[in-house]
Amino acid sequence: MESAVSLNRILKEGKHEVEYLVAFVAETWPANCHPVPIMELQSKSIGIPLLKLPVKEPFEKTYHEACAKLVEMGIEGIVTGDIYVVDELHGRWMDKVTKGLDLKVIMPLWEEDTTKVLDEEVSSGFKSVFTCLVKKCFTEEWAGRELNMNSVKDLKALAKEKGMDPCGENGEYHTMTIDGPIFKEKIEIGLFTKKQTDTRLYIEISKFCLKPKNS
Image (cartoon, rainbow, N blue to C red; front, side, top):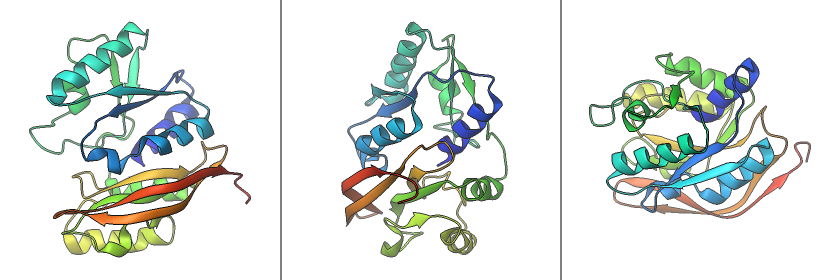
């Protein structure tokens, strides 16, 4: 959801022309966290084309190659929802994978209080669904739950109890944004299946569509 908030800020500022929504698409487990078909509906609703760039291991190399393609297309900068350095391995990841490229990394949320970022997400009218969560922090009922004004109170309480980041910056959870001020239509998720691995809970979405916001 932080990417959606960052995009919202950039569009409001009006200083940059947003040409694409960019998805770095891997075939490994993160694909369950951010399903491409949902991204395609986000793109359609927001009205900005989706650019899908494949990545694989070694990720640092293939991310760099993908970002080089953006430069070749005439793209001058890339906006991310990153808030702080998670660990030494990832560091400032986008700075790392764009090193040596003429591509500016823009991070509107950098070093902001994550609790305040979470508050901005829901108060601005964004709605998201929890798609992937770590078992050590969450129970099964959270998988597929909507993050909104009501559930954010439970999330904050859980974050305090488990000692986790409220925005899930350390990978505690992932979401997909389904509505918000930049959406012309909302994404309705009609059917999903809850699944799990030894360490994670996640959902597989099988029925979804765009719907008018007043429906």
